[in-house]
Length: 350
Ligand code: NAD
Ligand code: TYD
Image 1: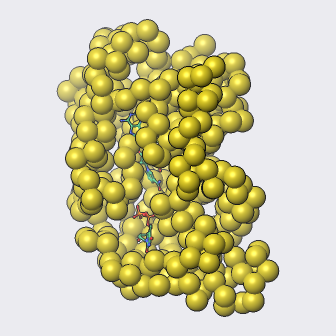
Image 2: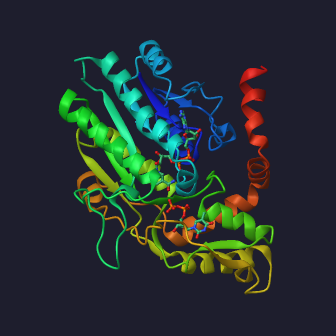
């Protein structure tokens, strides 16, 4: 029996990782540690919360004493660290929160793992989940590979880059058994509707404007979130200690092309005349320091660990749109803020 800590398991990607591991590994005890910030929602995990190999703990990774006590009590064999402040626009209005959670929080987890593992590192693993945004912004050509020099340009990506450096420093200095991955933009169910796709799906449904930043010509590489979870599974189990793996969908879209495609599909789903949703497109002031293009080369992960994405973008986008349209209650709870009462009802009042 292994005890695995997943941090940030109530968020978008974390909830998919928790679900993936709880269902695939009944012999693992999966502990989800999450502070339930605005981005954490236990309703994302309703289908696994009753399973015997799953446990939720509410707590803040910035609280070093709490983290150390938790590690002493649970003696984790592995850590999959996803907890983070994750939204670029929020990092522009409040950078400090990103420094605390993404940098200090990561160091606290590294220190606690070091304290309990000491020199007994056999079978132990600290897996740090990061983003392609640490590599900066590409022009028309080229791809991010694992050796691309870091060039973060937003407070979010700078804080993630800093945490990546610390994780590597603990590997070199203290022989911590770390592994890292840097992934492109994820899409899928349970994503907080501040990010492009869920925000725009919700706005189209309610006939609200679609705020396109700048000229809409920025490019992102989109990966279905379940395929990120399958890559995390492979890297956690088979990745080489000290190594980094890039994860991406080889699926680049200029924002405005993606939004036009979304509008077209939504017109069909909502039974509206063709061209209705695209009338909602509104060009707004650009995001300051807006990175132009991200594109990942994931051939190391594909060649060395045999990872392949399971769905095409067409399939993944259909699945995603259908999920948001079918899960109106989830979306309404998130947009109204009611989801924050869920923890109290489920865990405090009981
Ligand atoms: P998210 O914002 O949806 O979820 C983050 C989770 O972390 C939330 O549940 C939140 O409550 C929790 N959290 C935040 N601060 C905490 C703290 N101090 N203590 C404990 N828990 C805390 O983020 P996401 O999109 O699921 O991203 C997860 C990870 O993957 C992040 O590390 C992010 O940098 C990385 N990543 C995201 C993407 C993407 O496209 N979303 C792409 C590549 C990498
Ligand atoms: P986002 O989902 O915030 O991810 P990231 O900034 O981490 O890549 O944004 C994806 C792209 O969509 C990015 O180029 C910014 C753009 N965007 C808009 O044009 N309008 C919006 O309202 C949002 C949220 C994003």
